[in-house]
Image (tube, rainbow, N blue to C red; front, side, top):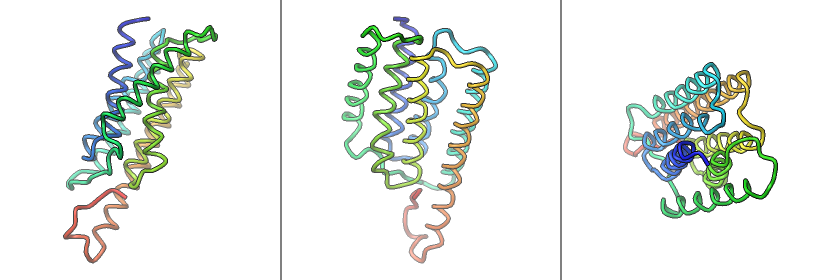
Length: 204
């Protein structure tokens, strides 16, 4: 196992754990951006320059749009319902399964850290997607689900080609933009309510 890839995978999972645990919208967005930016690097060989640059731009754009959507207000998200220690244990268990499956003799064409990080992100995304009570949390869950699934595919089929990377970058940026639009809309609706100005707005 490549120690560098394992370190990057650990950073991706840590960013995802922050994203699903934090109640402050910008902290959660920051954790998501960490996961999105570093995820394409968990591959062997590393993606070609054009594909890697496209993924970087797509991830940064998605995070920037979500960051802007929470600007000027202390927008909160519901955060983890079970607490960050439980989220970390869940991610660790899923990552262990990913490493174990990679060693069962199945023909994998990508590195084991990709399978481990991918399953960890998928596991972390389940609760936000299924039980999320605000748009931002659901959007973060969907982004992690997408990224985790792509990492699992990378572990199975190897590094995606440059065209695939560009298409993935567009999908990531589009998802981030859609979430940002819905968050802004939700905050605007909250402000328009008669009791809105006196309340702490949430991204619903």
